[in-house]
Image (tube, rainbow, N blue to C red; front, side):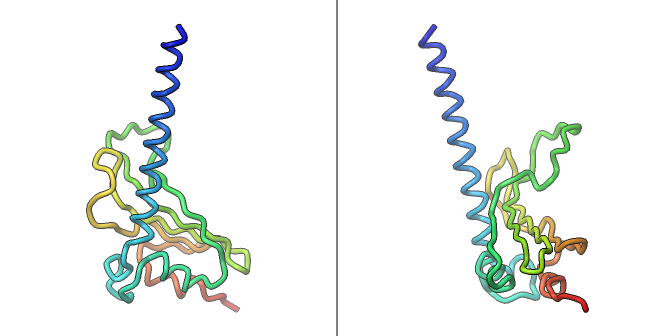
Length: 138
């Protein structure tokens, strides 16, 4: 009985470790994507560096997720994987950028792409829209 419990626990831990490793790969792939490959209007610069430059002192939180596609009702066999950057701007507005980097079946592979960009109530799929979204309208 103890052996069975130990095997189940080690399987759960192994699965959790595998999930954490995948999360790290997803986030790394999003951070390392070059913005000129995501939007031809932008310079050749890594996404994480470019985004921090746009945000100034705002702290960026990174996570891996399903790109908002799992709604609990639809069973999808292959779920998209996104590296998500989020931040609260100095004026209190919320920023979210999701970079698609693969799928649950294929893993992290293929060219990354902008899945979603929002600053408060403004949304886009073009990174080049971010600077104008960040400007505060008076």
